[in-house]
Amino acid sequence: MVKELGIGLAIGILIVLAIQGFNILPLIFLGFLGFFMWQMLTQGGVAGATTDNDSSEKKIPLIQFDEIGGQESAKKELMEALDFVKDVKRIKHMGIRAIKGILLSGPPGTGKTLLAKAAARYTDSIFKAASGSEFIEMYAGLGAKRVRNLFKDARQTARKYNKKSAIIFIDEIDVLGSKRGRVTSHLEYDQTLNQLLIEMDGLSVDDEIQILVMAATNRIDILDPALLRPGRFDRIVQVDLPAKDGRLSILKIHTANKPLAEDVNLEQIAKETFSFSGAHLENLANEAAILALRENSSQIYQKHFMEAIDKVIMGERLDRRPTKEELIRIAIHETGHALISEILQPGSVSTITITSRGKALGYVRHNPEDDLYLQTKDYLEEQISIAIAGAIAEEILLENRSTGATNDFEKAIQLVKTMVISGMTDLGVVGENTVPKNLLHKEMTKIFKNIETKVKELIKKNQEIILKIAEELVESERFSGNELRELLKRERCA
Ligand code: ATP
Image (cartoon, rainbow, N blue to C red; front, side):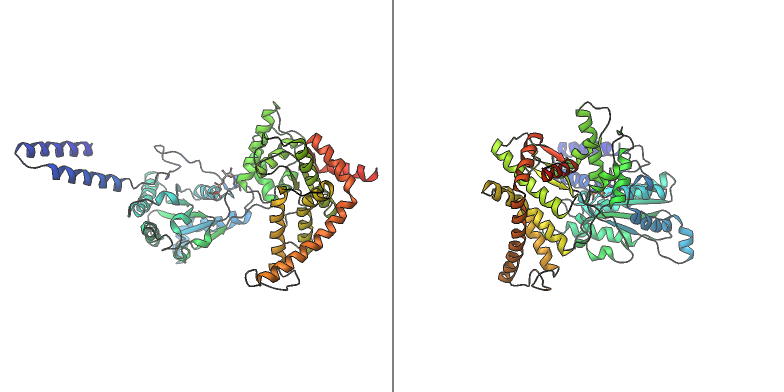
């Protein structure tokens, strides 16, 4: 209303001046310039800043900690810090300074945003969320203005809803909080970060509204050290990929609303999804339901989950159909991997398939007995053997290798490098960058040659079995680990 009155008054004055013979063009130009600047500065609110309590804005439903699967130590550490926010009186009495910032650090999709939402509910706080990228603007000063507005807005909303505290959650803080001076193109990043530091420095236990800044990043290494200084983000909570038990509880949460068939074994699925994040597991449960629906099944079976795992790891099935000769080559290649895997690590194959997905023409998925965080030299050598077995099977059975093994070799080279830098080779303890290249090359070639000789022997000994299983694989496209083990047993006894 005030805006419209102002514009009307300005136009009126301009008309009067024009009638009186003044040159009003410079005034019009200045007016436009002023209006443009004003528009820019009043756009200070952060687009994504939303609250649970404000019905005029998009609502973010808050959740409880027990709706987050796994992450037990992150939850515990976080709740301990949040108890400080809840009990300001005791904190004040003990002369403890307020916790101003908590940084959640970890890979994507592990539940950092969920934890921040649960923190808001746990502390009965207003929740304001924004992403680091929303603060970065072309115009100097606008990002800083947005930071100021975000804090102001959090206080106002808390007051409006009679809350004593507010949580400001900044996702991808690395975008605005990377080391100052890193982005040389303009100073906007630095100004925005400085403003955030100023706002955080101004927070105190005596404030009428307690503000806690929570931020998430998966690049803690590039954050400006000033952000991590005590008194700013002085609590860092590590949110890692879930271990097997964590994966099981996340699966339970995301399948609770789904019609599961009796054969579904969530324990087994948790076992086969090493390195999956919470977001991957949610996606897996969803994909399994979609696969069941496509088959017009009213329930979701274990086979749907198994196929969904392949889809989440490798991507969507491709319509492309290789030629008959290619198919037999792919089948021999994959059977080579699977056979060596079963010989060296019995029971390790979970699935073998020649269905093309993503970039893979076929693949063998392994079934880790337990999550492995340490790898022994023997284990690494076995993994290298399995990785190169596909190419060797092609060479021995088809007398020719193909380009299908490029990824396998990359994997094998990485594994050999791991052996080198872990001091497992005849080079002793060396650094990857300090060891002379020719020595490194010689050692890596020696390791490869040794392993290759052993794998060739095993493949030669099992040539007929590989061929038979490969032929059956071309017919069926896919075997589960158990089906493969049955076939191997049958062929070995035959
Ligand atoms: P990013 O770093 O990419 O922002 P994030 O760590 O913030 O990711 P969230 O946004 O919290 O991850 O999680 C994404 C989705 O993954 C959630 O909406 C939820 O469906 C699922 N999810 C992730 N972790 C968990 C978990 N621990 N328990 C239950 N669901 C989870």
